[in-house]
Amino acid sequence: MTKIKVYQLLNQATGQSQDYTVAIPEFQDPEFQVLPKQTIVVTAYRVPDGLSLSVEPQQVRGQVICSRSLENFIFELQTKLTQMQAYPKVPKDLETVVDEDFLLIESKNLELDLEPLIRESIFLSLPLRFVNPKAPKHPILNAKQNTKATNNSTGEHQPFAKLKELL
Image (tube, rainbow, N blue to C red; front, top):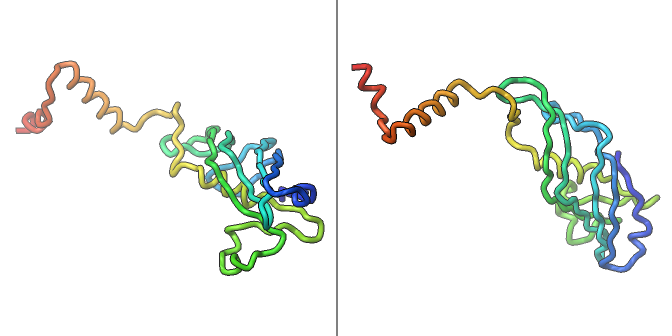
């Protein structure tokens, strides 16, 4: 778990903020393995009922499998802006909201677990598939590029030339 102590920030006036640099936990995800010893900066803003947490876009590196070559490679991910609210107790107007939409601050020692926020920031930024830029291109893509190159060199486009050869 990635916990921070928020006692000082909760005792400050509304509008105050504090940056926390925390280690990115190693998530057990089969498609994106976060590399160890990475950190991420989380900014906490004091709001009337609790805290507003924000993760600005940052670089995160992970090991993935290429969709084309099925080889492992290191992928650099640019996270998207992610925000979440944290409260010492659930406000009355949020009682019907799903628990994953906000974080609860532990009332005993005023600690906040940032793992759900970090997880959401990373996994919502992942692409649908990973393609290594150094991987060989698919044969169909190579054929299309070769066709475009030959068509561009003659200056005219003949879409049915291959069909005429079959007659």
